[in-house]
Length: 139
Image (cartoon, rainbow, N blue to C red):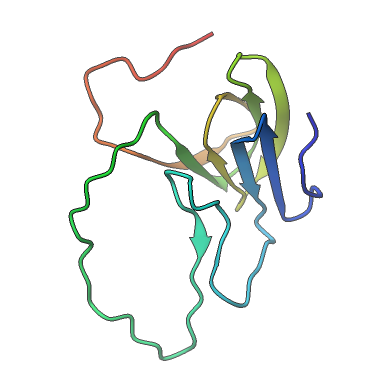
């Protein structure tokens, strides 16, 4: 499987209409607020742009009830280099992305793994809360 976009700033892995992974390269830049993920993603990723001296009003997020099936992850490479391996729902390999410092990947479906090439620190954000139920199937 080849990424849908050029391997420059944003790359996506889509299988049978389902977004499995989305890579945002460190050099991707926007000048206005831009959300990268489609509205139907359970994890929204975007850049919010503000002019100098803007004040973001104090706010609290309302306690909305949402039903989410599965767990999505957003991983940022803080330091190092690794390759994200993306697998389809059938657990067959479909794409690989080499990730470097500052790159971000949304893992939205299917399965994934990582090969770490040098000492690496990943910042991972995923839905909680953590449960005592099994959350991963290794293969």
